[in-house]
Length: 521
Image (cartoon, rainbow, N blue to C red; front, side, top):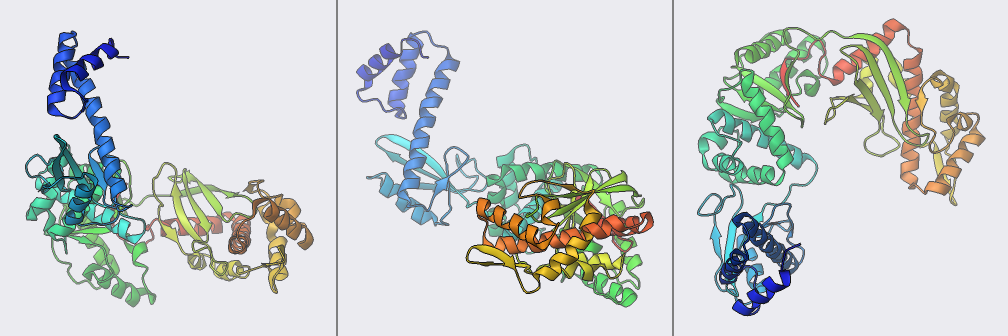
């Protein structure tokens, strides 16, 4: 509560007339009044700042409303998000329409004049004797592959800036360096200044990614990779290193190499071109020596995290000893099954299997999980299980597809539904020891017979009203996950270790033929 508030407002109004909180003359008189009342300079600054910020918020709201949904709210004061991808000229028109009578709008480029942003243009104008300024902030990148690409390229941009000698603790100055110096952005393959500006806008809009990038890159510098390479490269199957790996693997194993499981690098540091080798092991040794010496050709797998950097498939291969597997299912009509590992270097690791496209004809696939990790630890195609236990895939796929169909709002069996249900019900007892959530109905009751399964399904459908396609997809995934769980639960200790460690190492890109790379998370 402000002491003598009514007295202060009355005196302020007496001196200036109608109070305008951001008018410099009005603020001057408020300062005088508060000084006369014995306020400290700190308290005066705080109340003036609060009055100013309220007006800034009103200005931003007015611009957003005047843009007809082409601008959006930004998390930072004095910024609006360019969600409609409008041009600077269009933004100036919005300002003039919103603030009637404005003739001139000054535009300052990033880093110029009093524009402290390293990525966004600053717009300044005067209206009713009040000075305004606001940044037209870049559109926040959407989901999917474009966002992933931005995260990977912006990581390289930050690494290049730090290896060049920039100080990321001063964010505005550092971002300005990234977009202004060709010795920084020009080292990244295919990078132009305009693309660098887009990436700078991305990390300025997404501070959590900026912080993650900086922590990882600074740690990267500490472990020896402190020199800028000849070129920073985004991973692609067309890279010479990947082409050579595929050729060598085909010649030795007669199969097509899954590049992501050979080396899951998202980006590469190219200090020199890749020599030619006769064996995949020779190429792998070269990549390992590159990491050890800080030159050659270095791959980096990127995950969002707090700054941990480690070497995968290094000189000392990680040893795993499997003590056991816990099998966990969700609700009856949900999708997945999780296998939690225990043992040497395995505690906290697991594989989770489900479908990903939401279609009933899809085969379940696995994702590596790790306790405390912010991202998936690798993916596993279900077909990989045949490499460790032949004939397994066909058993799992024998129950995929639509087992049920909806008619007059009641679920019944499809043409092949009963057959699939009977296959699953025969092996159900093998997963009785698995953890299963009781939501959506009783597992034990549902798998007693065909009639009870349909009754449980229809009761669930009446209560929850899920979509028809999701029911078909979830039951297909559930039948497959039960079949998979029953197979795993039936393995002897030797086969269990072979299958489960084989799939985990495949998912983590730690197979015998996988190559060395850094993992940033």
